Image (cartoon, rainbow, N blue to C red; front, side, top):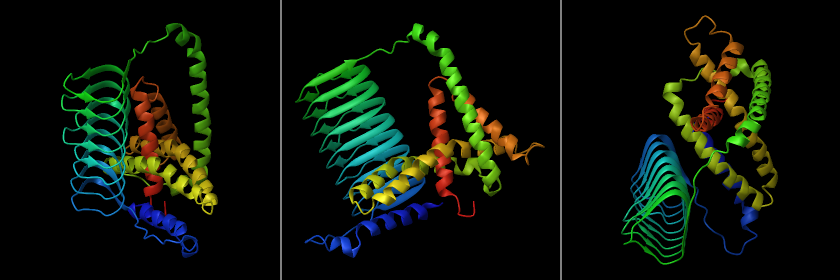
Length: 344
């Protein structure tokens, strides 16, 4: 489904949570402001937003003030405005250059908190490379391959890090305790040799299980799966899938807390895990069709899907890169599932 699906879904959730019968139970009635949702390959937020913001895409930039919480998922992300609540980010390259009133949670490849940035609460982050250059009013906890704390950095709390390498400037100011754990990744050759056969057997059984489900899925729904232009929709589907992967648990938790939304939360939980499992299969079908687009077997959806699943499974065995390929397949599949038209 398109962007309007998620917007409509959020409106529905908040409508359930804030019906007149529920609000009547409280003495002080509060005005409910729905979050602003934007998704696309390139998004620039340059107008102030009163309330929460949900943003997904390839290249994302915020240069204005957001009064509420901000949830961002994408490739390259730059936050150069002021956030009145929490900032939660997941992306490949993340830059936080503005002020965050509350907490900062970041997961990414390269993460940088600039010299002019100011974080009002705690900071929790993980990534390949993390650079801390700004002012942090609360504690910091992180895990990364490399950590750099700049000379102008101010940390008014504890710094707890688990890293491979670290570079902390002597001019930086750390008020709390500094607990830096340097670890080395060692490959236990004995254990590898001992469990290698078991690991391959498990992966082979997993492949056969997915193949069985794939064939049954194609039998009942294969004709309803329309072709997808990978080149045009690849990044959009991944961004949308990442957003759903992050936001869905929060929505389900909010529904569960309200008690009256608990049944809906359980239903969404089942749909959530079902979508995660089917996402790889959907991606396999799309990849298979793309491979056979100019081949005489382009009408044989069974052969296409089997080849697609085999390709994804084979690439998933590549060390380090394989995990990223599997995650990409899941995000792409989830994006297709929820961005497709109802007719598909």
